[in-house]
Image (tube, rainbow, N blue to C red; front, side):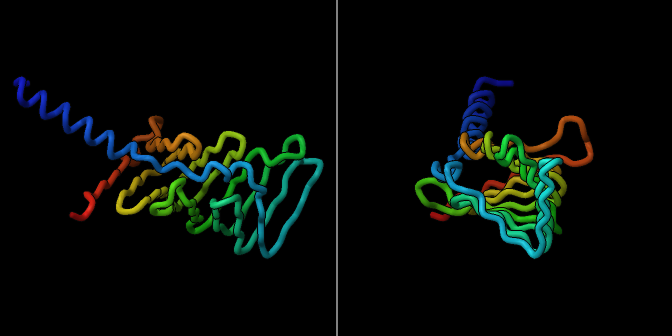
Length: 169
């Protein structure tokens, strides 16, 4: 590669990484808030450490909202360890720190790990903020560190698609 082409390639790569990694940090206080769940039905199995909610499920923790048809809460030491939500599709929304466009997404199945501030989306997963979009069969969203990972290395079934639209001038 010629020196000018190499320089242009490096500049474009740095610009692309800056756009992809722009802050999408959720509200710091979200993880300190209680999780509230509303549903048509609820079942709690203390021995199994499971709580199952079905029908128009709405889960809220701070600015994070999850809308699903079914939610299974895995409880360990009297704390929610993992929340698995499913829908057609299940959807989520979060307000970012400092304002700006909400972070919204959807997938067939999702897992939220409150202790890790980690959201894992599977099956036609899409995450959007403003005009930027990530889509793949598998997306991890590290809420605390504003880090999105997309794609599943163990599967070649679908590639990752990222759409970054420039801001209007």
